[in-house]
Amino acid sequence: MTTRLVETAAKTPTAERPRRLRRLQSLRMLLRETAISPSDFTYPIFVDQRLAVPRPILSMPGISRLSLSDLRKEVMEVVDAKIPAVLLFGLPSRKDSQATEAYANDGIVQQSVRAIKKIEPELVVVTDVCLCEYTDHGHCGIVRAGTILNDETLRLLAKTAVSHAEAGADMVAPSAMMDGQVKAIRSALDEAGYYDTAIMSYSAKYASSFYAPFREAAESSPLWGDRRTYQMDTPNRREALREIALDIEQGADILMVKPALSYLDVIREARDRFDLPLAAYNVSGEYAMIKAAGERGWLDARSIALEVLTAIKRAGADIIITYFAKEAARWLQETNR
Ligand code: PBG
Image (cartoon, rainbow, N blue to C red; front, top):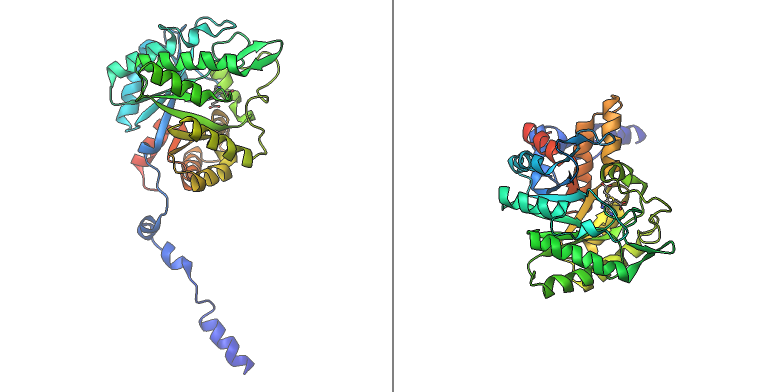
């Protein structure tokens, strides 16, 4: 009796054989649940008013700050890669306490938007709406007595957004994490007649250490203190859902979770709970880590990057903002992994 049982077990040790469906590359392709494509990507671009030629960003290998005149080449590359959107950041020639250059008519972002729309009207131009690159103290808002003022900042964010819309931006992306910023921007845009300018809100933006390379790129580190009184505390999940719900009430068109990789749970939950399109920002530190380890030969940057981008999509993101966009588009074209 015992022998018989053992024999049967040896013949059919298990009835469940998921490996059947992994035998061939073609089978794996057929059954793949998540696919990324260049059409998922938004490519961030830094434009520096003081430059005449590109300047590489040391902690972000492969990424440079550009001058206005470099935009043509960059835009052609993005379009050739079939990436539908860019996200613009500006480095002004002058910073002050009121972030004047953020909403200047001839500010660097405003000029860049005009230039890009002239080169390629079909390319979606998203602008980051924040003050940290434009204030002399590096905080995202107006400061008085060591405090970042909320409501005084709203006025300037709204002004900045309207100036971007005026220049031709398709979408503005407020990232200052001031309360009520989406409402303030929506009202100002509507009042100025820009009903069709969409708002992609950095709804759940955490006070993350993953932004360090970006701050080198954008020269936007706060001179004193940190951003913890406005950006979210990293351990919180429910608070992110509350921030998102508030942004929807205020009129956001697209939501965002940022950073992406350490917050995949938040992306998933936001996707399950809300129906608006969802973006995830694969931030500078996430890019730098992979690049650095790849350069040392500690891992294969290419396959890691594609794995990570796929994970962000699998978690529920519709739009992936990533510095890998151009490279990943090329990799995706070259192979089917
Ligand atoms: C501006 C802003 C930041 C990033 C996007 N918009 C920096 C910050 O909040 O300090 C970070 C993007 C990245 O790390 O790639 N507030």
